[in-house]
Amino acid sequence: MSNTDKPLTITTRWWWVRHAPVREDGGCIYGQKDLGCDCSDRIVFEAVGKILPRNAIWYASNLKRTHQTASAIWSAGFPKPSEMPYVNAFAEQHLGEWQGLNRAAFLASRPVGSHWFAEIDEVPPGGESFMDLYNRTCGAIERINAEQAGRDIVVVAHGGTIRAAIGLALGGQPEKSMAFDIDNCSVTRLDHISSANYGGWRLPMVNQQPWIADASHNAMHQPAGPEVEPPETKLG
Image (tube, rainbow, N blue to C red; front, side, top):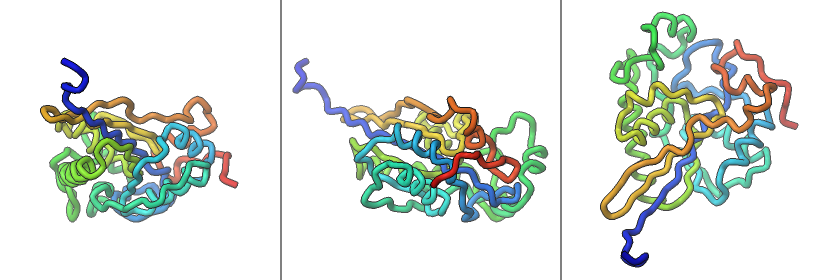
């Protein structure tokens, strides 16, 4: 078969960035609460920016901690894109009445081996299940794949949202994605590959932390909350 006879293959590269640590949650579950995040560690954002592609299409969720994280990456030297649409479907899981409960006590009450706040089909009172999050995330990914085929796409989002995207990339196995850690400010890349007869995914990297060689930034890859002291390296 000559090169001209080969089917056209299109690769769309998704670069998922989890938001920076939340310090104002009082040690409580926050889910879709619109809390700010700690973007003071410039070295972390410089490192993240170095592995993100230029000329990418940028998106964020509708929650301000993702906007603040994107702004910190740009402030650390990454070229600011012309726009960054907010996609409500990329918001964190709504944990209903569990939002505001002490995180450590709640997680201690869950069965041993639990990787998330609940089983994927369990609906918190007044909230949504992880499957609800998974389905809305997948719908948005499929739409953007069609609109931006062949592009680099950067999405600043949340731990639950990124796990949902991994579940899609694993062939529609959201339960498998729960075993992955997604740390604050980490980068996960998922490549969508399509041709006339094929549509599938590659997972080049998950939970990449390009600043990790320097122990002074350990607070950026631990559970967010007031129990984690912010690092000494500050913006400005």
